[in-house]
Length: 150
Image (cartoon, rainbow, N blue to C red; front, side, top):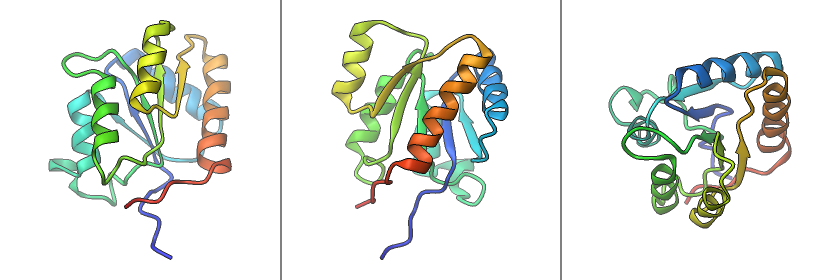
């Protein structure tokens, strides 16, 4: 059986520093032991996934087991990253959860059409965010089977 190329790392893709701080606090308070990394733009997320530049060191920047992806970012959007992932044979099976502030039905539908595994609206309340992150990580990192890469 081939070695699992994924780590237990979570990759958060979000350009909003306040949202990242809230995520860090909620993640810690949820007691989640999986490491996480942050990409602050669509381009940075793609560089991370391709191992370009500073992301070439997979010991420091391992392939994530789960990507939490915001939609609205300057330049390319989370939708662009999701579309790129699903078209890139080496990373297309990755599990991607849209974790965004947009409750817009059109955004939800668009994300699923592009191949999102789930769509979750980001709460602004720390305790609610903690609960959501705990549930997400339990499901995607503990309970569900990971995809195999081609």
